[in-house]
Image 1 (cartoon, rainbow, N blue to C red):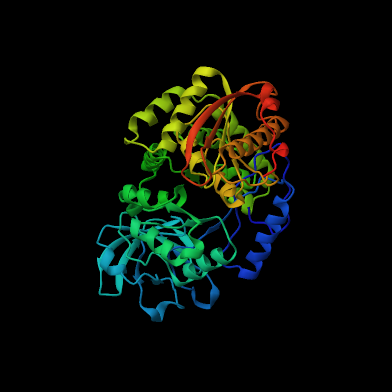
Image 2 (cartoon, rainbow, N blue to C red):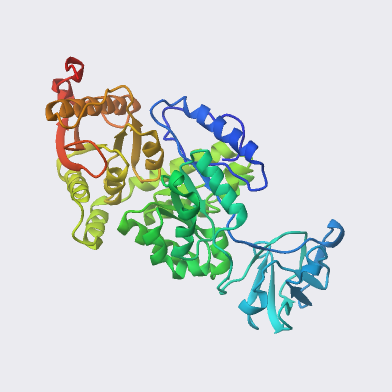
Amino acid sequence: MASNAPATTTTNDKPVLHTYFRSSCSWRYHASVIQNARDSFKTLPGRPCAIALDTKGPEIRTGNVKDGGKVTYKTGQVITITNHPEFAENVTESTLYVDYPSLTKSLVVGRHIFVEDGNITFEVVEIIDAHSLKAKALNTHTLTSRKNVNLPGTDVDLPAVSEKDKQDLRFAVAQDLDMVFASFVRRADDVREIRRVLGDDGKHIKIISKIENLQGVRNFDEILAETDGVMVARGDLGMEIPLEKVFVAQKMMIAKCNVVGKPVICATQMLESMTYNPRPTRAEVSDVANAVLDGADCVMLSGETAKGSYPIESVEMMHRVCREAESVVCHPPLFLEVRALTKKPVSTTESVACAAVMSTQELGIAAIFVLTTSGNSARLLSKYRPQVPIIAVTRSERAARAIHLYRGCYPMVVADVPRVTSGNIAAWQSNVDTRIRWAVEQSIEMGLIPAKCKVIAIQGWQGGSGKTNTMRILDTASLQDLPDPANYDA
């Protein structure tokens, strides 16, 4: 999303994850967008949406064309590509400036240089000196100023977090945002550097590492161990590795995220043709569906909603395709595979989550209700891919917003039930039952479960994160028989 108008949402749709930011816009504008979004979320009390900031990340760009014009490079033409500052404002038909300090150190003869998303490709034919090289244009194209540059197959030596990124990350902390989409993550140290910049005040912010270069793919295991989630950013990734290998990288990254239970987003050109057309291509529909079947927790629209002519239709189409794809997923084999690949021993919370998902397959369960403080119990339930919805009941709006990342989860914020001390077991259990009863009523009203069904309720024996250890099987028709803490004087 990229509009500064208040959004409208219906109670029948699961809220979408919102990203709003363009680095060229002012922070005041961003702040107004955030406020408009939060005002809109108030139309869905108890079901807040998450807001993420997409960082600019380390990037390479060309210089400015002389006099603000255009330059055309023709097939077979040999030009000089340089990082010498004197050409930064003077790109010509014979000389192209690129703002990468290690240009001649990183490249060797035969390597390719992609400019403007690969609209023109140059092949390095000679290294001239410490600043310049000769390159041959492999196709004809006209360039304007400040176009992006990709160096496929080359390890790029750039700082993980630029000064602009640091300012943006501090803005994310000040605005109490939920997630950061960290661009061009190449190694685990990049994630650690972002955490350092976020500091203690931003430790709640989830870091979603965007994998969009060869280094990120090669170092994926160490990145996955450090990050909160992953975005398969196929646009720039398709510039950095051969196109026919992008789907292999996508499937590899999604599978590894699934095994460790970390959320993974599939992004870029999902419904690209809907930027200008009311209907997607058949190939795009298959692409979205296959991302769901691969195991993606989220699929993301970008240009389709940021600048497209059919933003609402794009979201509706994405929603329908995802629902249809989910309907053909065979969940029991997924559960068995994830359980087999999970390293043992696991935590008590994960063991309970695994048992709950197994029970849904054997008992005709309609939904799993989980009381969660941090959202971790919901994440672990999602990891084992139950074939029923996960209703995550929490007092924390911050946790609820983050839970939107996890596949199959519906966060609900319960605010009207008074707190009781977990030291009083009877009062604590009565309070738990009230929250479960409320969530069941909300779920029936929303159409997530039928009025009469069996559900699983997961809770802890006391309050706080990491205390989940209890699973109960309940019949919604008899929930009124649970004790009501309204009669308890706490």
